[in-house]
Image (cartoon, rainbow, N blue to C red; front, side):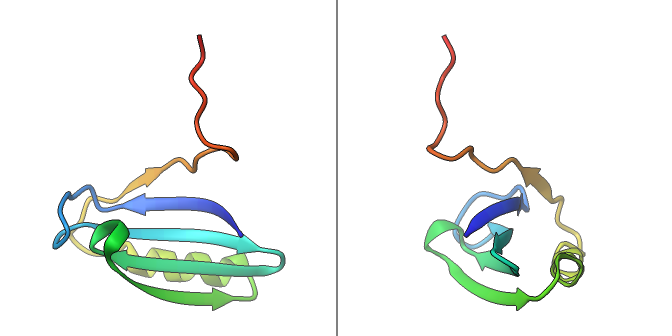
Length: 82
């Protein structure tokens, strides 16, 4: 499964942090909504098309939070340049 996009509500802490992920796996699209950081609780949604998945992402990002899109890490992790 490949992570395509990641949004974060800009808040720290287990009670305030929320994340939304858009992922692709072959011809299926997956959206994860997570509350509480890495140890938090997630809800998962699965779609046949990217359009359907993006519609859910837009709905999840609505509201008073200031969402930030984070860049996915390249395969193999980050390598510093010298």
